[in-house]
Structure formats: structure tokens, C-alpha cells
Length: 326
Image (cartoon, rainbow, N blue to C red; front, side, top):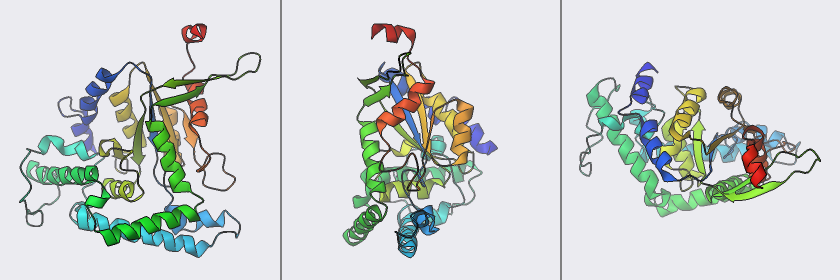
């Protein structure tokens, strides 16, 4: 962890600080930074594997069917990790970001590079860090190309069928979560004002520059593959996928704050776990807590930008000058 902290805190190589320059120069429009958990939030997997998702429906859903669906996803995730993302070689070298070792990548042409014979080992020296950075570069390129350019048509058909089966079994959880990401990426900001003294609650519909960030407790490479398989890769760039497994979500949240912090930026955390709840409290950011149970207050389908906007407005109350203008 100390090695990671040293890398990410250095002014010359800090991926957060490199990105912050772009963010500050981009626009004066309001920006909402949505910070997502993955498992049991944007996707359902653990609750399928453990049967807890189906058990919440009191017998109306086939528990074993959910477990079987989860096992099929698990098989595909591990297979693609190993076949296309070097996971067998780098499983023990998890980093919080693909860019974490970018300073060690010398830009070498890798078209004829033999990754099976370069002898990568524990990346404590510069040579092994360079080898890992090469792999991260290839993974980033594959992520940007899209799943259909990585796997064959038969496997793609299996994954499409599995996605539709899962979406049907979970009452459209996957497609609804994806639709929410699409809406939040379009730049529309639905932020209710706090209730006025007479009890009337108004809302504003204004343009904003929104960003979706993923902070997952899972390892980085399997998390990127999950984005691939669950159709999130075109909505969440690989530069916006953080693995908190070694550093904790509070540390990742602080990097995100450093990266995007500006007077016009509002942060909101959306997840189901205790760790993101505690990290959001430390940062004093609003939290929308997801609950996959049928009677859960926030779940997919059901969660809307308007609801999330209300949580944001509680923390980021419009200034008096803005209220006067309205």
C-alpha cells in the first residue's frame, strides 16, 4: 500500500492530478460526479451466487436458477480474464487504476511482444513494473475496442443470451441500471430544490456535465471484465474504474475529489455496502443506498435521476444568489 500511495501521490505522475487539469479546463457548467459501487448496485452477481436475491421474494423466484445464472457469469468472467486480460500472470499484482504504472510504460511497440516469455514477477523493481504497465496498456486498448472485438461470435451469442436471461430473472435490474447510466451521461441535471417554508418543493431541469465513476472492492482486472460483460464499458471509461481492494474506498474517494474538485462539482455516492457509506460520510458526500430486496427503497428498476438529485440537493443546497435569480 505504501508503494501505491507513493506512486499516486507524486506530483509528476499522479493520474488524478494529470486528469484534473483536463477537468478544470473543460467547462464552467455544473458537473455531477456519480461514484458507483458495482456488485449488488450496477450488477447483481454475489446475491445470485449465494441465493440471497431470490430468497427475498419469498418463494416466487427459483433460488437454484439464480445460483446457476451466477455460476455461468462467474465462469465467463474468469475465462475472459485469463484468455484476454493476462489475469493468470498478474492476479497477484492488483493496482487501483490501469494508469497507476503509466510512468513505467516507455511506449514500446507491443505488436510482436511475447507476453508469455517476458518473465514477469512480483513488480517491485522498475523492470517488472514496466512489464505490468505494458499489460495494462493492452488491457486498456481492448476495453476501448469493445467486447465484440475481443471474443468470437459464438461466445458473444452466449453472453447476449445470458444477459437477457439474467435481466428477465432480475425483473430488468441490469437494463434499468444501464439506462440510468445513459441518462446520467446525457448531461441532464434534475435537482429538486429543498422544500420552501410553505411546503412546496420545486425542481430545476438544467444542463450539466456528468461523469460516472466506478469504485469497486473487487480486483481491477475482473472488474473491468464485468464492465465488459454487463454492457457498462461504453458508459464508464477504463480511466474511471478504481479498485479499492488494496487501498480502501476512502482513499479512492479522496483521489476522485482531488481529480474533479472545483466550485461547480457535486459528488454523489451510489452503492449498497457499509464501506462506501462510511467513506461518503468522511467526504461529506450524499449517499444513495441500494437495496436489492423487493421492498427496498432504492433499487433497479425504480431509482431515478430526480431521486438522486434530491439527495444531492440536501448536501449542495442552492446559494441564496441562485434562489434570488429564480
